[in-house]
Image (cartoon, rainbow, N blue to C red; front, top):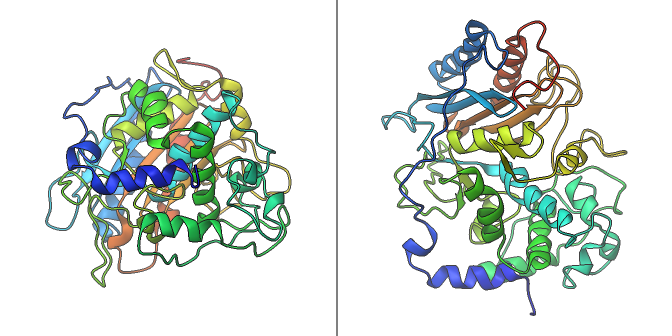
Amino acid sequence: MPYPALLAFVAALSAATPSDTTVRPDRTARHELSSAAAAGFSASALLRAEDAVRDEIQRGSFPGASLAVGRWDHVVLEEGLGRTGRGEGEVDPETTVYDLASLSKVVGTTTAVMLLVEDGLMRLDEPVSAYLPEFRGGNKDRVTIRHLLTHTSGLPDWVELGGSTPEESLRRLLNVQLRSAPGMRVVYSDVGFAVLYAAAERAAGEPLYRLLDRRVFEPLGMLHTSYVYGEACRACASTHRPMGDAYRGRVHDPIARKLGGLAGNAGLFSTGHDMARFAAMMANGGQYKGVRVLRESTVRAFSQRQPGTGTRALGWDTPSGPGQGASGTRMSSRSYGHTGFTGTSIWIDPERGTWVVLLANRTYEDGPNRMQTLRRTVHDRVADAVRPGSETGTAGR
């Protein structure tokens, strides 16, 4: 096969009907919300996190958001706030679909790599070229899967991809040269994760969307989580910028768009309801309501900060200094998470079992970006809502 399996899928995608690729089942896998008390939260304190999001909507930072909070596999709060767009319908956490942006790196690409490592089909310290012989030139034969996961590959953060088709764009992406020696610098790289997706797809021997559907999304009941929703998706909250750069059901990220919406750095769409199930699974050591998706040891290994990589774990990020990053000041040093450009975030604290999902379309924002400040506030308020005496342990597991 001359190119990664992604190329074949993208080619098939262009000839497929909408029902083949963009329409998901019209059903919702409901989960019952646990009481705050059962999960060890103060209900009144937890609502302060919701108030922070409402306040930001009133400031005009974004038209609406979906907020989900829980502890281990308890989903405690799942709320739609505001509207999907200015003058549009109300946000429904079960059905309003958001462009996850860079959350695709962890929910999609990293999770696929975790599964492939468990299956023995990928090894973290194997050269990328072992899976993608097309990835060559310069020092690229020294770049490993671990380097891509920790953003230490030496690849640039971003490139403007040429190419008139997704296949040609992918070929150009794989030819991008390193800017520094592997392992020497931490540079958050969309390019690196797009390469990682292609490598994982070659290792899997099938399109990653099929692997993720079969092994993660369908078992967890994440029935509204998908790549390539399509512009006809009326349940999708649009991303918008003042210059008229608006997308609904089509990925906002330019690299992912050039790759046909199937990329390692962006491209996934999901709801607050679905993402709550994913976060609960991760917080509960790879298992949700009796459904085992990942081994607990795999979750632990991928969520730990790696030596010489700044704050980076394997795919995931970990807390920065006070007043920096998204985690806030109350999450434990073992916490991990990720953010997305469109206004999305997921953060998990395995020490307390708490987790937070916030999905918004902050690309409506005309002024300064306040999302990081809001994320820190919400995470601090959720941490503060844990009742004394239940800070650690395995309640709910």
